[in-house]
Length: 278
Length: 230
Image (cartoon, rainbow over all chains, first blue to last red; front, side):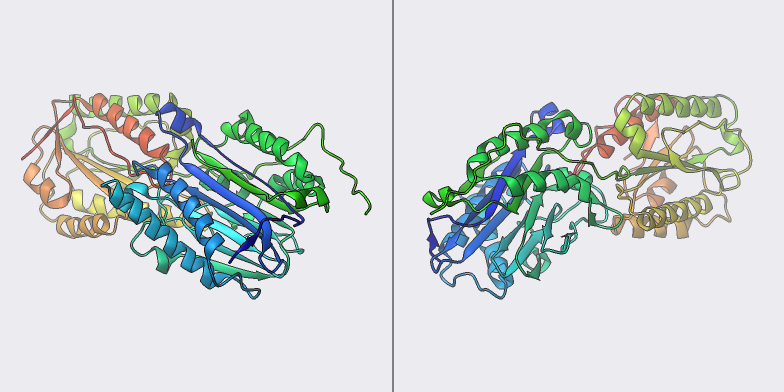
């Protein structure tokens, strides 16, 4: 797939990862990472990518693993020769999961370490005008509005215990990876890691907590591309703010996208957002 | 070409309108306490004092207070002294020595309590940490006791990671028997240092109850109150 550098999509996106107070207290770095982009394919179809990864607390290189996962995801989706199928990208994203896992294994070998030292969750969404495909291994969530209200098609993948989950570096990761195809155009999208899960999802029912998302999507759907830098700062302010910090002490990532105001200025440049753990 | 109105947003009210109010994940800890006649006097007094220090230590940690749950089974006759309840309301009972040492029956009774508690968590959408079961005894199981069935249940549960089972022997406890019951190496309490034991337990529960996904908790060595029996 060759991506068209001209960005004329109507999706506005903003994403950020911030360190949690428990990591700060123990001298750990932020081990979350994210990558998102709205652009057009070579044949002119708008496409949205939004991904996140959460490095495992037990893994000495969990943060590096999360960054590698995001780099490999971008790399794979840029260069995949088969393009993005209009009927859904489940097979493509499972293939992408395999590519990401291989890249991390390669990185681990090069560093003289084991893949589990780079353990991280991996989740995200690929959306076109006609279908959105979610892929996930581990906890965190992808919430979408396909025009009928918020839904979370894949449940956060937790083990039996609160401190257990699954990682893309697990031997059986490709058997465990889950995907979901949602026909239609994704009007709103949120991708988040475990640190946000507790405050954004009603865990007894696994339903998105609508008030959490409402304010973000309202603003984002009214935004133009030139707002995105300030929205990024505002998102960082929110994630690092007191209201969030007193509810969750873990690293947190939130990537948001919404159909926004048609904005021809944004056609001048590509619109890629990188934000890595650092 | 008409210009689109670029109404840039000056003051961005970028914020959540509300947060999901999920229950805290729970960290259940079951104490299986030997209160048989041989514990009479100083041992039972120190055990009671230890439970008070457990409460005091937990009270000092806001997160542990919200997440840790304590349940107590005593034997003497095996009975639920305290069903699982939040550390916020944990009131140490005043235990009195009575009866013999039906250790196995008490273990089976306690493990059933743990199993039921997990069912309750699941039914209410509450996430939880791996339960801890702490057996503290100064004796030898009563002859007719179901300790072999209990040993099997402990082994099965440890193998499937259903719980973590720790055994602590006090004074004349039969450490060989404890080794047969517990997969983990039993510890012998130094003298009657129950308070140090419960302080360590509280600190360990704090560590576990603040851990996040992907965190395998490494416990600090039980220094100051125990010896590993080889």
